[in-house]
Image (cartoon, rainbow, N blue to C red; front, side):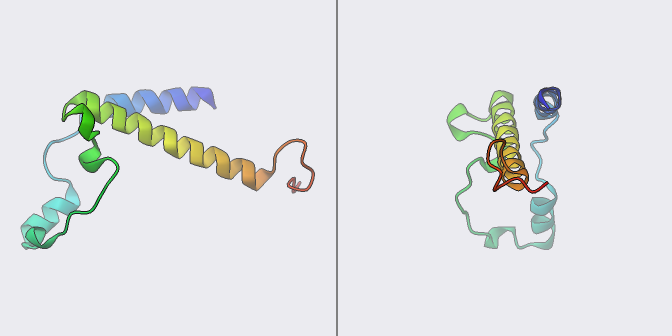
Length: 95
């Protein structure tokens, strides 16, 4: 599992260097169809896939990608443990 996490981390870091500054599909569609100005801003933990306190460079995107990856990994690990039960707790084991 650690090899998969390391591979995913490396992939996230590399992908950050290819991130486009141009609008994504949803933003582009809103601009094309003319309703982009009607959108309301909402709070987002990592708007534009960056960490605001780190500025707008590639390092900010890399950090945001790694944080997102670790959050998903943690959630999946917790869900897996909850589904499969934990060792030493026969009540949770469903085998």
